[in-house]
Length: 457
Image 1: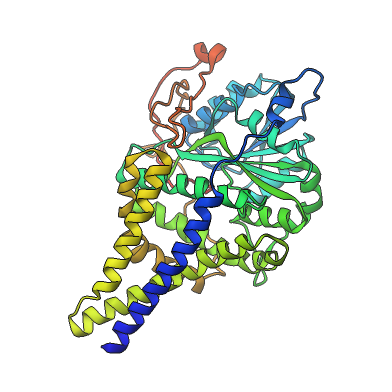
Image 2: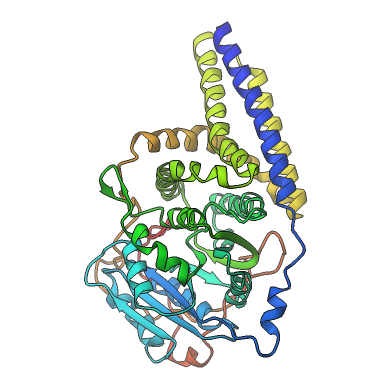
């Protein structure tokens, strides 16, 4: 009993010390810097804007969701040349998304590629990249809605030739649906405005997230073969494409950046099952690329070493202290109060700091994420580590109509999204309407079932 109590106390104390140092440094470096003048340069007369190819890979996507995604891209206020390539990766619901394809078939900026069979997001993405020619490539998930100025803001960051990739801020478009979507929305804010923002201070964002990430074509040309042929234990690696490509960019000597005011709203899981499947896949991809990331650390700022240690050793110490405390309770019937109170105190401090920084009291409710992390996510990460060779996406589901028959679904007109509100700026992201196309569509409800974890996340 004494051994368990000591182990739990030492582990949780070490966790508290490490977290205090790491989170303090993160909060310091995550503070906004003076805005760059590059965006103003874009607005000056005579500046030649780079061409941008927007790539939207999709697989069994809900027609209404896809329609809203493409409408937001079509409504971008970018003054340069913009082209859009939609890659249908062998979807089984092409009769349902056909009306969406038809809407954009007459738009010269849009091109739709139909893959003969499902080849996976990475290969579908690569097929689009190789058939495009823009100076910059913006990858957008098919369930993501962009604010009208996203392309302009990302391009302004990419004007620096040393930048190979840049990501925008992600928010949950469905954050008000369930308690879980609200938690995930806060989790996204913390991941973007603490973790990514601090990493960006040193030009080394470790993962430019897939829903909204821009890449330099010249850099992609150097890395595409490596990106396409990633293997793990002799098997092709398909998921985790955003993290792997980001690390390849850093390895090649390019900077990777975060643009907080380039806001993209994406659909997040609304129940625990899809959420845990998504987290399992993300954990596997993170572990797979950890060794590659470790090799980069000597070339990067010392803060990035602290970041990697904090993100990997911290959860290990938390898991050890929790297991020892649980064993102490089961075997001896005594509660490890020091462990419980320390974890509770760390949770409240973190949530209070987040609420202050975001100017939003709802972040106090993020304390509910702590029991989810301890009792669900930590065991899931342990399972992920033991099953690294498994490359199953876990969330790909064929869409079918509610009565088992194929039915044509006319996409709803894209309207405003009042609930997709940025926690950092309190400005709502707007889903632009289809304007001149509105007369050709009718508002109906989708008859399709869909795994809310998204087939491509």
